[in-house]
Image (cartoon, rainbow, N blue to C red; front, side):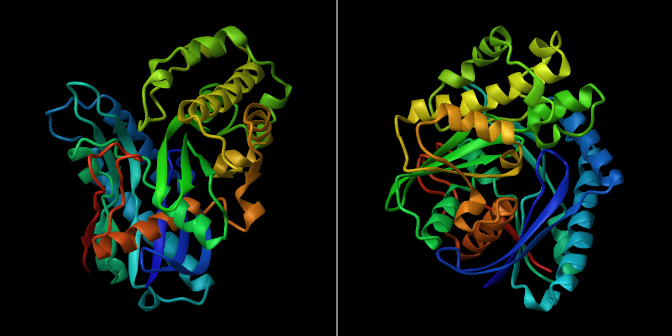
Length: 368
């Protein structure tokens, strides 16, 4: 089937889109991919929803802004895809299924005595009606209800993408978005995965908080800064890094407070080191040395992050494009693939990727 996958990351930058020909097991073709920047109005409402989610007490009604933000997200997805399809000589009738991840405004991993909680906003019923195409959505809830982390979910696609490229195990696929996550493929269909630590998220928040832009473009601040070893050690003292895998994060799980005494450039350099050290510790936790590390996501555009990874990891570090992958579209492709699996009742989360007790299906289908 031909599936249109969407992803909007915690950076609140754009709607990413990709078309995949897949039955949820093998990939038979790659259609077009692209992105459209979020409008300022949509970004503002997502930021407001995220702020309210951070103070939303368990057991109380969800904030009213969630419904507004869900509709805004769906409208952004529809408008983005209308232009995208037209630019690629496609119509809605050419699409069999849509996979919409939705905008994450809250993710709390399960802790002893406290179940996990995760919220991705997107009005799937509205989008299905508007596009006239079924929409697979709400991919994480079932996993969390079953005691899983609810993240990461892309690992099964990382495996399929590696196989489609003829790559060999052992292999690691590292996605650096707001949070960084890694998939280890040891051979066959054996995969393990977890969030390693911050990706771009803390850097973005720090730069925005200082009025220096939306992000550290091409690492220009970090490139002239110096890592503060004391601050780095304090950040790495977080108990997350010694907890066993599988495990997951929200980009707000680490505080920027230790960096307040640093100049902008030094703070950026220290956060780059924090991201890379988190990845190194993750590899150390797994005790595996892959043939190579394939890096996708926005973080690969930051030369300072790529350099820091190469300095710390014992395996060669390659950008996704080195294997012909579309590094900015991997997660949109992943949710197209997961949508196909959802439509067929195939598992999307696994004991070694989210911590559930058995392979689990997930996601729901909204029909037009």
